[in-house]
Image 1 (cartoon, rainbow, N blue to C red):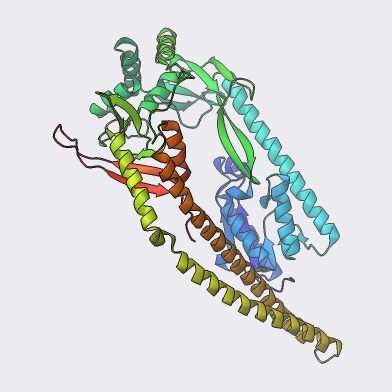
Image 2 (cartoon, one colour):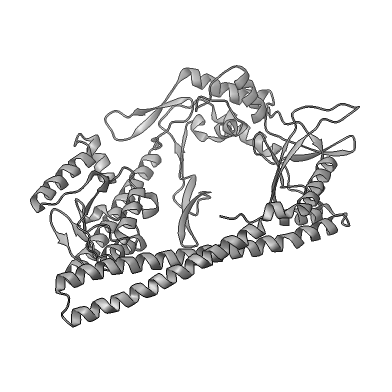
Length: 522
């Protein structure tokens, strides 16, 4: 569809190079670039409204991490702008070839110009498209060179024993090295005393990380994030070699993976085969001796739980389903006086334990009640009437589209018969094309809604016999693992809450929130 808009947009984005220049006193980047583009607007007699200025304050590599670019591309696809002003072509994309291709295609298909102080890119001209492709290629190459230079610099600094992180470990502050590039660490005496106490409690008093965190919280000692200490926080501190005077770099690496066309990143432990792993003596002073640190490692290794026996059989049919309503953690099974119970293992959690058999009975009672009142949950009649209404609207839209297409043919006939002049032809074609485009989008959306509602209705109807089968088979089975698989096929999770402890005369009440795997209508 041709682009008849007379509106213009402006895109501003910082780069890593800009951040370095700002630190050297070059001034705020976006403000400087805005002034350059405003002067360009005056020269070209272009007006850009405030709502059409897109300021990207994040320095993201891909389109997915740049919300303003996503918004701009969406508007361009809709034919909202005649052109987009940018300081240089490199500001649009420095991501991979896929991102660059998306940007190039969006501007090209919408016939939207790219306006820079040095050149105006018009995609009706083949040479401009080639210039654009070459400019994006060079920007990507420059980005890779800068990234490699930064990573190489960080690696060399780490190998020299310098601290290359942005946030110093608890017990240290980051300091600039004199007469050389880079940073090191300086001990904070009060925090260093806390670190020594943690190692002392672990080595000499047989305290576990959970015990140490409780001890520190009781003394109101703030954690590195100025909140309560956790067992994981203490465990991470005990494992950090920086406290014995060493620098560790690239111990965890970020690997990118493709999932359904989307790029996701995940952190992995570096075993030395992924990237350069650095483990060297640091320039900073140690808080803990190597002897004590190594002793901690030996104790932790001896406390590791051995893997479960292959012959282990599941004892809890609700395993993996029961979650604590207070903290969200999975409940753990244990046996007390021959009774199988579950409890929340989170430190200081107020949720009280309960018998598994009692919880299991309540879950089965809920499923039986759900079957008796399934019409309330499924709303099948309401869905049928909603689909019928969608079909009625669809038929009306399809008739309107047919009329609009016939009108388009008449406009062309009137132009060929010279009833319409060129300006009238373009004006009426533009209006009619807009109506056709809008109707096609509405028809597509209605068809998608009908399909989604039908799919959900089918899934809901399939869910009923599945619940009936589970209830029938569950009561016959004596295998906890088999029961667990049956419940997981129809239940997503079960939240559990019990705030009072029972006694030998009666057990305290508990509450359950059960979430069936039931498709939800949009």
